[in-house]
Length: 100
Image (cartoon, rainbow, N blue to C red):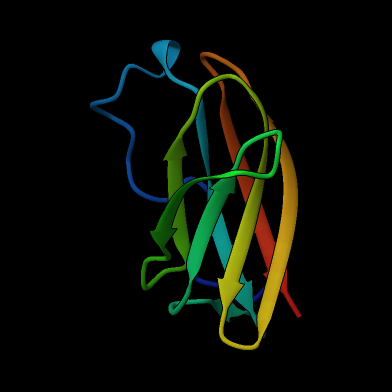
């Protein structure tokens, strides 16, 4: 992301055994800057709500999810975005969600 100070990966996973987890995480940006206000929702394969987290001041978010297909819905003032994603055990899915 040009101009955005946040990095994909966000908060450290140093104390997490990622081999036993499915991680979906990322950074949300808008206008070449981290989106510091908003929420990110996780929907299951049936489009049912599972979880929601606020974005950090750096636009970061993270979910620990079961392996499978998910939809990440980004909700920031004036915009929404839907991103399909597949999670797998032992894998970290890093997303860069750019809202225009």
